[in-house]
Length: 112
Length: 113
Image (cartoon, rainbow over all chains, first blue to last red; front, side):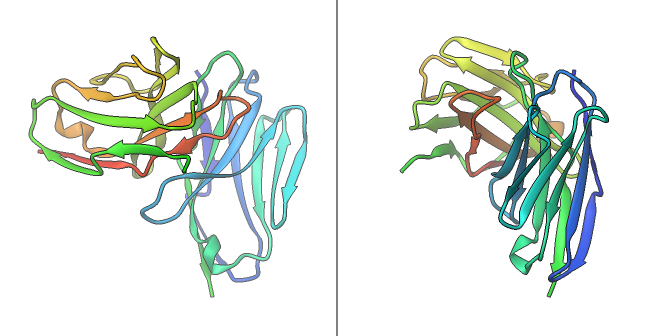
């Protein structure tokens, strides 16, 4: 089955700096890659996703890039703010398998 | 209000005592899923369901059962809970999977003594 590895496990940045979280996946058939944000004590919520026919997607301060050849995708957060502090999860799935495999999560701390 | 509702939110039980965690969604979603979240391991899928009476194993199904008799409900059953099932559990639903946002419930924190 699919295996998703996520790095780093923890990340501390200064407010205003950029943060990058990287994930690799094992199954070349995977074609959907969402990112979820989980604030302390709350449920995961989708923040951005990308499909395999697209190399990059942006939404304000958040962007995701996908390299299908290398089988990795990354989350980029620019101009970080304290409210960006949370655990971020990447995930991968493929049409047909009907299951979603998550990475182990990255705890991002933005220092004011 | 569109939501996924889990009950109970917190549960302490003892080894071997059967329990059920309920999950209900009001969005007419076809896809529902159960995850467990453990420190350092992220979210691992237990079971999922594509529609009524259609369920399948995820990555960690051992010790769990599910049923999907109605579209809105997807209960998680632990027939004989063990301490290694102590975890935070999330139910999620979406219209489909690969093209649709998954909405998560608020979570159920389970402790098995």
